[in-house]
Image (cartoon, rainbow, N blue to C red):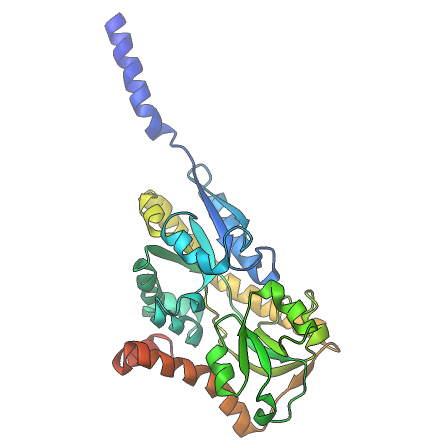
Length: 320
C-alpha cells in the first residue's frame, strides 16, 4: 500500500507541470516613448494578447528608448535581451534593405496578409532571429515647417528632422536631413537646429511642435507606415503551437481595427489643428514631383541594394 501511494505521489508530481504550466513573462519596449499617441495601438495589441493568453503568456510593456536606446533595440531583441520591440523597419535599412517595401506599400494592410507581402517582411525578420507578429501603426506622413513655401524651390536648404525614413526624399527636394530622436524635436525647433520635421499628424499639437512649425505640406505619403510588433524568434519558437496560433489570429483580426483607429485619429487631428497650421500645396506638376520624390528615391535606393529584378517583385507585392 505504501509503495502504491509513493507511486501515485511521484506520478502526480511528474504530471504537475503539464497541468499548470508557469505563465511566460515577456518584456516589450517601443522605439519612441511608449505613451506617445503614435504608440497607442501597440498598447491595444498587448492588451488583446494578454487577455487571450492569460495564464500562458504575459507581456509587460516596460517603456521606450529610456530602457534601451532606439538604435540598440534591434540587437537587444535579436539577442534575447528584450523579448518584443515595437520598432520601425527604416532603422534597419542597412541590414534588411527590402523591408523598405513596408512603407512603400500601397496595398491595404489586410491584403498584405493574403498576397505574400507580410510573409516577405516576416522572412526578412527571420534572418535577424526575429518574428514579425503584426503591423501596429498606420498613418500618412507629412513634412512640417516653420516657413511658408510657394513652390518646391522654396524647400531647398531647409534643415529637416528625420528619423531615417524621409532623408532620401528630403535630399531629392534639396532639403538638409538632420537625424534625431523625437524627444529632441521641440528644442531643436526652438533653437533653430531644424526648420521642420517629418511626422504623421499624431502628437504634433500636444507636443507643441506646431507652435514652432506652422506650415505643413498637405501631400501625404508612406501611409502604410513601417512599424511592427516584433518578437525574438527563439522566444516565439518556445511558445506552444496553440499560443502561436492565437497570437497570429489576434493580430490578423486586430489590424483592420488598428487602421480604422488611426484613420479616425488623423481626421480628429486635422480638426484640432485648424487655426494652428497652414496647409500648403503646389502646382499639379510640382505636387506629383513631390510625392514621386518620396517613392522613387526609395525604390531607386532599393534597386542599388537588391537589383532591378527583386525590386520588380517587391513592387508587385507592395501593390505599386
